[in-house]
Length: 282
Image (cartoon, rainbow, N blue to C red; front, side, top):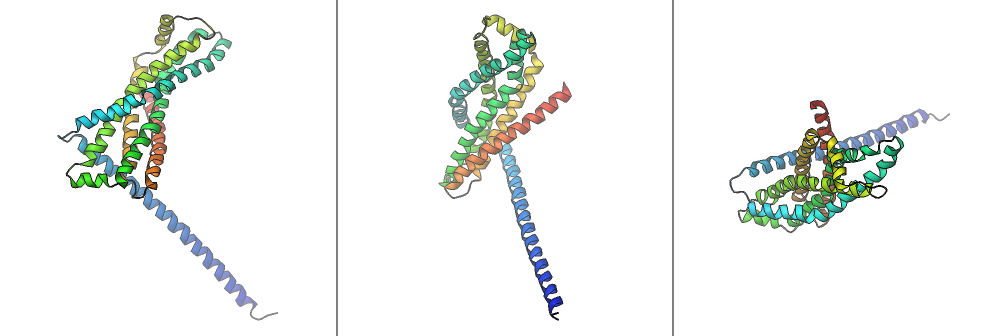
């Protein structure tokens, strides 16, 4: 038996333990770095939110830019919302009608569709569509301005970029998205009436009377209130991702993509919180 065998085993075990410790240290360092990046980004976002809120109540409000952004967010999104609202009502009616017919409750179809669209489907689907179109647009626009140093030029020329670029877009999104949701709800119910006449015959007045016989004001109010938070979340995320974009050209695409993902996630989270609060209060 080799006399050096115990020493070789000790050396091999020491090397294994050393390699494991090195790998553990590298993993710990990477996780710590990721946590630092996450909390630094979270701190930057709340600082950005505070600056936005502070500049919102400044006396020199950019009203003309606010109107221009409202036009861009509202009017330019109407065709997309129109198609989405109509299809939403048609699909919901076609899918629900056979189930209700099996139970002999086909007369409840207008009320069920109206309640579903007004309380949940209309606000959430419209907000997700707006998160994709408006959030990505804000992220790409502000990101390109960041890359081309236009934001730095605004700071040099004594034009506050937060007040001019961010506040106007956030307020425009907060105001226009609830209006777009109401418009999508109306078209959704109209599309439901059209789909109900594919295999039946119901007048316009009768359908709407049956629809709004089920829906009351307390169904309508919480759905409208949460759309303001949807708009604020979409505007804040889109502006933050674009405003904090890097200097490279590829950062514009990353800002637009991350704005869509985070804004859509926030819409779902805000909707969950709103539903829980509504359930507790009503």
